[in-house]
Length: 225
Image (cartoon, rainbow, N blue to C red):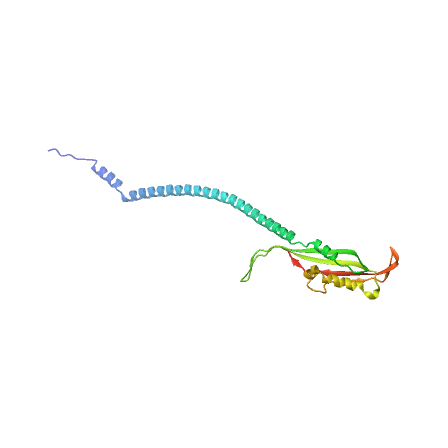
């Protein structure tokens, strides 16, 4: 039987040992792992960029919605303010002071030798802004609507042509205070007060007559409208 001698066996064994070298295998595995890590990192970076772009788009949409919401809220607040003012104006118009009643009451005063020569009104309103509810310390203060405080003062000028001893101007004042209208409007019976008197004066339209001029004033109670 012939004997076969493989003269390359030593080289083949060396090649086999080189192929099965654990160090090379470890290096190869590490290289593969590094490549996979870089690939995964690149994948994550791409996803992160896409997520960042989507987030920026959503934030842009949110800013647009927030701007529209703020505008709508401002419009609603303005509408509420206008409605509140309109309601206050309607209330003020409905409860306004009617001077026709005052004039009608004045026509009912008849005193001999007394002639009314002037009628002056001072009517003013002090406007108070509405306030929002707020918290002071631990106490909650509720909101309050806008209000208008009405102040009315009336002044009458007249001439007393009677005998000074008769004091017809006092009778005129008493009749004014006794009228049902003024009793209802002026709780204080002394609301009418004399502001001043003139010296006896000759009437320029009738030189045979003299008069004493006087002024009566009263202030109606303040009312919040």
